Amino acid sequence: MPTFDIVSEVDMQEVRNAVDQANREAATRFDFKNTDSAIELSDTELVLRSSTEDRLRALHQVLQEKLVKRQVSLKAFEDGKIEEAQKGTSRQKIAIRAGISSEHAKRLNKFIKDLGLKGVSSQTQGDQLRVSAKKRDDLQEVIGACKAEDFGIPLQFNNFRD
Image (tube, rainbow, N blue to C red; front, side):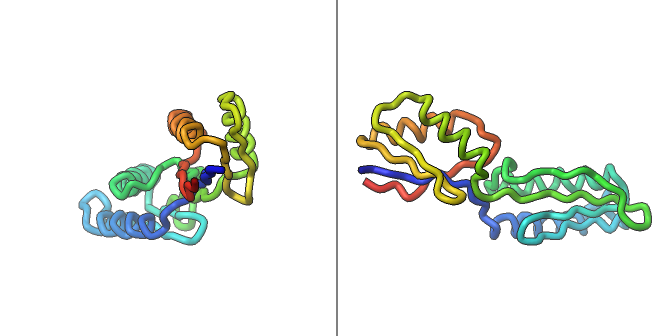
């Protein structure tokens, strides 16, 4: 029985490269001089720091440009509020969302069932979704429909087996 997995992954190496490029650009650009603008990366979030709120927004835009150039989906990032930090500086935390949450898995399962394809079933397995069908064409139709719909998270389709 043909199957495939729907996952939501973030290539952390590409994120790391984009953060490094954005930091390098912030260090050399004239409008970022003496603003102490920087981006810090941890496993689950990014922290943007700058002297003013408008410089923070500009840094955020630079980061987004670098992420898009490296083909990292912006849907994988959840922006936090811009908050005041020490000495009148501004800080913003951006969460990195990887994996399919149970809420998104329910929406995906319902969407696949609502397609009305005969013999297609899906079940949640941890932070991914396994879709199986009797025919390969039905699975390809599910992939096409999922790509056309916006679920608010980046989706990848892998582990396709006949």
